[in-house]
Image (cartoon, rainbow, N blue to C red; front, side):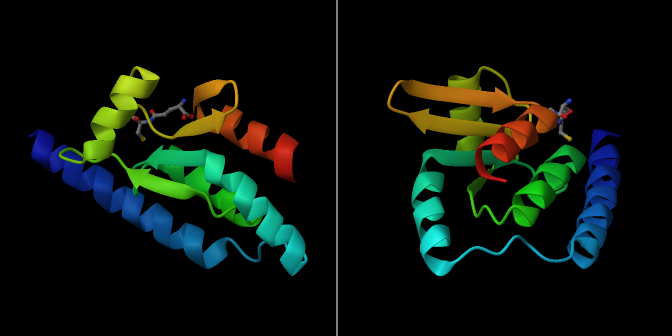
Length: 123
Ligand SMILES: N[C@@H](CCC(=O)N[C@@H](CS)C(=O)NCC(=O)O)C(=O)O
């Protein structure tokens, strides 16, 4: 039964992801220098996610719009990143943004909070 539920969930997620790609439009443009500088800063971020998770699609869409090419790690069952997320963040819930800074590592859960954080910093 759970196999069928997972199949339906992935199918619906795939459809949402497809419509996201064809409707997301253009991304924010920066000068080459500004984009390069920004991409250096982005090395401190990692997004833990599932491809077909609607909350991850919403977060990836906002990241695309802000032109933030952040490293993504898929946490499907069997992936080593799933354990990394569980150990570091405390639970397997996606999306989760890992933020590395001089003061330590923060694991930010909740799509709305992740998007707000990125908007405040980069938009
Ligand atoms: N309110 C959360 C909801 C996140 C959520 O429910 N994510 C699901 C995937 S779509 C999840 O991680 N479920 C745990 C699991 O599948 O193990 C958000 O907006 O980020």
